Length: 113
Length: 122
Image (cartoon, rainbow over all chains, first blue to last red; front, side):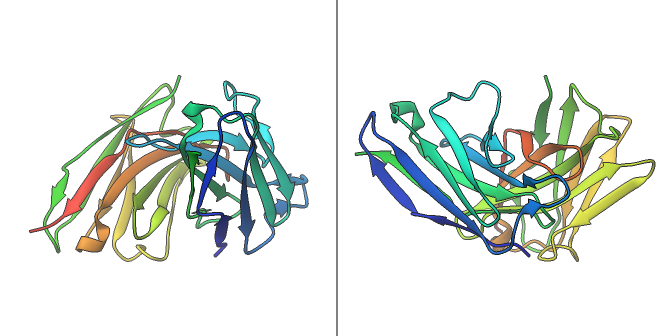
């Protein structure tokens, strides 16, 4: 099974500043036949289900602000939020869909400093 | 726009069976280009994928090893919904349960159901 590990567990960033969340997979999630990384990012606010932000590691879901971006390949990935807004306070999760059982990181709680 | 509406009891007694349904609108449980999944979330286990059902000329199921002996995910084509049955529950099965769609084979979860908090307690 693929284990996903995020860092840090929590993060406090000032409004307008950059937030960076890291995700590491225990196995490669880059599928060589199509050169795609099977990695997504989600945002979860209290009382709500996770909301898809990024898929294929770097493709922004429709309607997601362009201050959210994803990068990385293979086993190391990053979610970056430039110019943090108050509404970005949430828990963020990475998820691999390279193989079942699909698995998530433990989450990174993002707060305002 | 695809929407998933969950229903089911919020309290289940230990050793009994947890049963939830997920009604689908805007897509079909019999779609050849989607899979239908159950995921749960608890403070102790985080987000945990439980299993899926999907149709590719016949029905298939996959389950997480952690629950494989206790879980069933079934499609109901007449009502365009899927169900989750988890038997022999213990307090460790207390969690928020979500249904979610994946487009294609392996992919991201979108959309999600609204979530159902299920508490296992006598």
